[in-house]
Length: 175
Length: 133
Image (cartoon, rainbow over all chains, first blue to last red; front, side, top):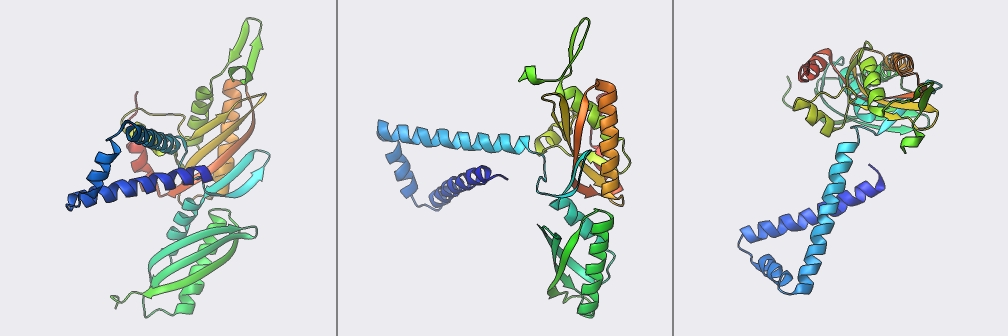
């Protein structure tokens, strides 16, 4: 998402937060927001300001709608190849799917959350995992690193710089 | 803007080909490549398609200003296929189809792999589309 898009999203969320807060407050019996609303429409000047705020909100919503409809999903991508025929890139989301599929080959992994970043040397992958307690951590970590690196290189044609395995938790329910 | 579109002149006049035609040709060529599960449009395009209007140029962006045409393709690849190989085939097939059918010169075909899905999920995604014919 470009910087301007993020700014629009931030302002939009802020406005929505204020409106949601006011609605919740009114529903709980706190009438101050209604009093402020009465005040806001009490004079022609205030009505003009309220109208301008409304127009800004409509513009923000329209910008977000158009932006959402226009852009194909998953444009945050890693370039695999750049040649005469054109460029080949893989979205970060697609690399995560490859990782998730690859990890299924490793026994003892109960849950996995991959975080993928990129450096000039290649992909940097962090694997937040939950494993069975009876599994050997160094063994499972090595297996994960090997299988993920192999799949990313063979299936995705991607260069892998580093794979970090972080054991977040053990699956307490396993036997 | 329209004046920048590539033209094919002949004795009777000039032939101009709309971007939509190029994207349809490119889309049809791309989905035929083995390993391509489906094309990936924005969520708006997907929603319209679910409502029954099939978009053959979905996931294709055509930049046909000037002499040469640049095509950006957003695809979902079937799990198990080597992505660089599938992407290379897509580039070759799309370039060939567009150049043969339209006579335009394709300078580059940029392939963006948006996601990877299993054969089963791909079949379900493609079944969801309603064919107008």
